[in-house]
Amino acid sequence: MRTYTAVIERCPDTGLYVGYVPGFPGAHSQAESLDELNVNLHEVVEMLLEDGEPPLETEFIGIQTVLVA
Image 1 (cartoon, one colour):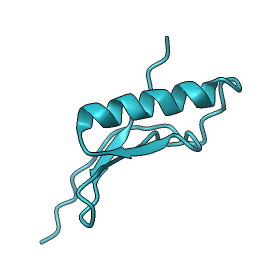
Image 2 (cartoon, rainbow, N blue to C red):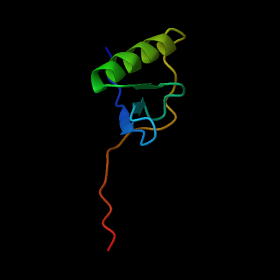
Image 3 (tube, rainbow, N blue to C red):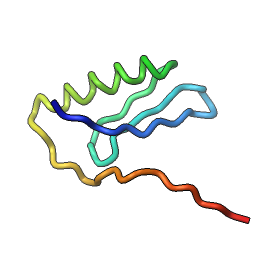
Image 4 (cartoon, rainbow, N blue to C red):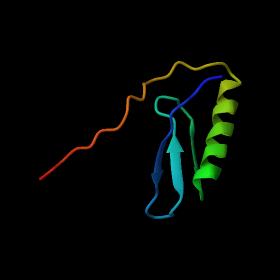
């Protein structure tokens, strides 16, 4: 079993949650709730893995707060 980290944002225009897996081409989705987004991303990643494990283009490291005065 593999674990992937998804980045989640909320679209200010639609109010939808938008998620993607950094470095995993095509691994993105949107939904009205976080639970629905998790299901959608799970399905997308499973579908993409049917063709074999792609090499990730980038590796998620984390988040960082930038303080601007």
